[in-house]
Image (cartoon, rainbow, N blue to C red; front, side, top):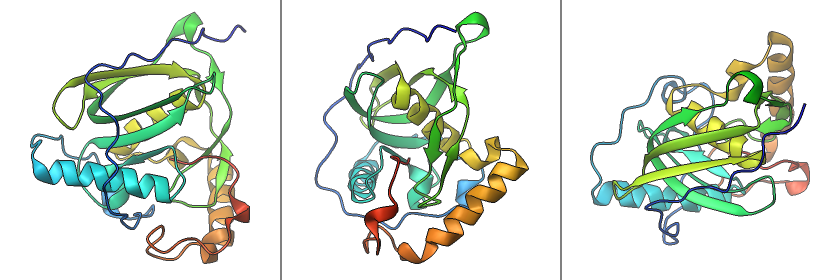
Length: 212
C-alpha cells in the first residue's frame, strides 16, 4: 500500500509553548482519572494557564512528546505536545476539548510502530494506528486550533486524544500483548520514583522510544 502523503500541519491560534511551569508527578495507569472520560475545558483563566505551563515542564522533564491533563491528575480534556512529524519537523501545541478525525476506507493505512506512555514508564510495544490524524479544538486562550500530520505526530495526536476520553493505549492491545507490556513496566518500575519526573529516573539506559 502507498502511505498517505504528508500533510503540513495547520496551526491556527497557536503560540509558543510556555516555558515557566513547574514539574508535577505523573499519574500512573490504574488511577481513576486515567480511565474515565474527562471534563471539557470551560474556564480559560489563570488556573488553566498555570496548568498548561506545568504540563509542558512535566512533559519535557520526562522527555516525552505529549502529555494529557489526566496524566498530572487533572480531570480536563486537555493535552500539550511537542512532536516530530514524518519528515522530522517538530510541531508543538496545546489542545483543549480535542476532536479526532481519522482516514477511512482506501485512505486508511495502519502504522504498527512502537508506542509507550509516560503513565506506564519504561514499557513499549507495537500498537497499530492510522498513519495520519487530524485534531481540532481550542488552545489555552480559547482560540481555534487544528493539527494534522503523519508519522509520530499522527500517533501522538491519537494517543493524547485517547487520554482525554479515558483510554490508555493498553486498552487497544490484545490480552497477550497487554500482559507483556505490564511485565516490562514492572521490570523497569524501580527506575522510576513515585513522584517521577519531579525526582529523575534512576537509569536512563532503558529509554528507547519517545512516550506520550
